Length: 392
Image 1 (cartoon, rainbow, N blue to C red):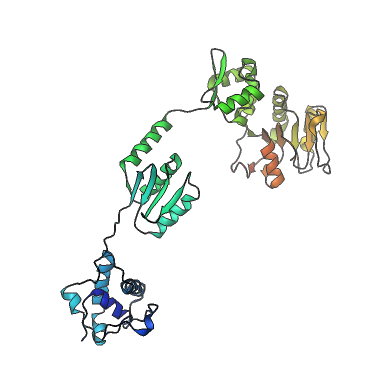
Image 2: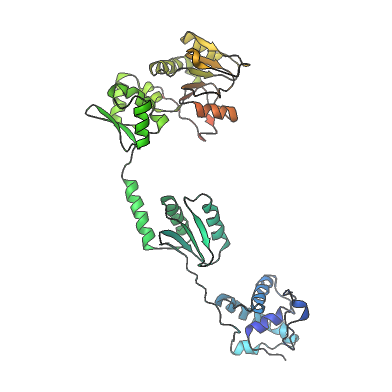
């Protein structure tokens, strides 16, 4: 019976890499051909192939691989005996050709040298998750092959995402990561609004970026009190909110519907009561001089056109064949049946609620304000349904 000194010897013999009698590498195993000398269970095949290859290449097994290797050798004791192989040395005293490698199985999220570091043993699912996140992370994200650690830029977005991901995957979270997340939570708990306010008769925007302040002063008439309606009307377009105090002032001097139209970029009218609603929209447009009002009616029904003409004089009907448009002639109300893509639109009124297609999307992007006269409203740019304009 043939006996061997190390567990690695037994692995290589079982895998067919070495001759059982001489323990010499077989000539046909130049590329580590895997030809087991026993009938292996299906679930043992890949494991034994991997471990025997590792041993034959002069690399040490890990501690977990070592435990599994001993179990596999002893599992096939009877089959090996029929091949003239005695496994008693493995039963009596386990000996290794190379000391087993101790693997660090810790999973930890930490901050090192102002970078977020992610450490964990090899795991395809975790690696795929970080590779996907790296595509959308804010700042760098890379794998440090030498130190075997992932590192990401220390930004708020990265920190919050990686902390949530690490918690879901049972990582150890360092005290520094916990501290930074606490700071973020404290900041988020304090209201931060870019909001139009009035204090002692003076208008201002809280937390206003300097670029926005300069634009308002240069292009929108500044922060004088007589410019209040203009600033309210541009709030949704410029990205700031309006304080409750100013909202109450506007509603008291006009109507809730006027305020709704002034502070909302996209609204929806009930088509069944379009006459009354459309009149209020045109009143708002005239008050804020949102001209030209472009009425988009692609279904060729002419219903909106007729209603517009019943409410206002001078409605210009643009034929379908006319593609180039110039609003420099002072028109206030323009009816079109194809998308307008050549200029900015102060107010767009659309009978179509589904705004798909390149030209339609471009028209939506060019419109400062949009009012939909449709039962259902959905456009690809907004990716959500537009709120109904309440009857107030």
